[in-house]
Amino acid sequence: MKRIRTMVAAIVAFAVPAMAGAQTLDGGWYQFGFGQAPSLAHSFSLTSLNPFNIRVVDGFIVGDRFQLNWSGTSTGMFQTSPIANNDGVQSSAFDGNAAWSNPDLSRGQRVFAAGTYNFDVDIIRNAPGTSGGGAFIDATTVVPEPATWALLATGLAGAAFARRKRRA
Image 1 (cartoon, rainbow, N blue to C red):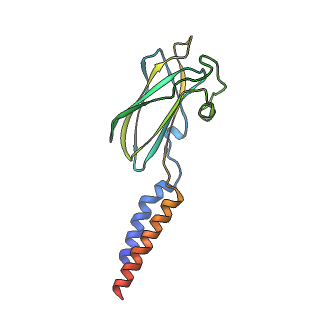
Image 2: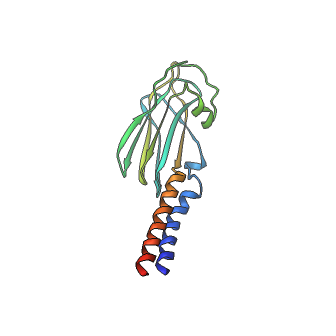
Image 3: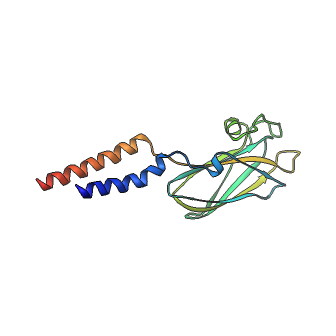
């Protein structure tokens, strides 16, 4: 019985940080400015014990595009979506949530495995008639779905049942 309590305590110790709420870079959307493309717009490091999601979205004027490069636990890059409509038009997106919900603004996202990463956000295209601007980035931990918790509970119950049956 003592081993089962120890095992449950260990699982809870690792699971509670994931259930405690989304851990975010600076508490939510982070706004950054940039200059003429191509150039480095923003750099940061992030360490997480859980998988996490990074979202990058243009803000203010439609037309800027970005490339997110990372190194650390893994290495790679992604580019934000191409501009489909209203290139060079002032948007009404002056915060991260409004920008993310505006379909005209370039955006990109990716889920990362737990680990330590160094990120560089490069501006690869400026909106027409501009030589700089602003954008938003958001990093949040990925919280397991209820089905994942149910699978974990079923596995623990099965292990406890098998152990109890073996003792009898």
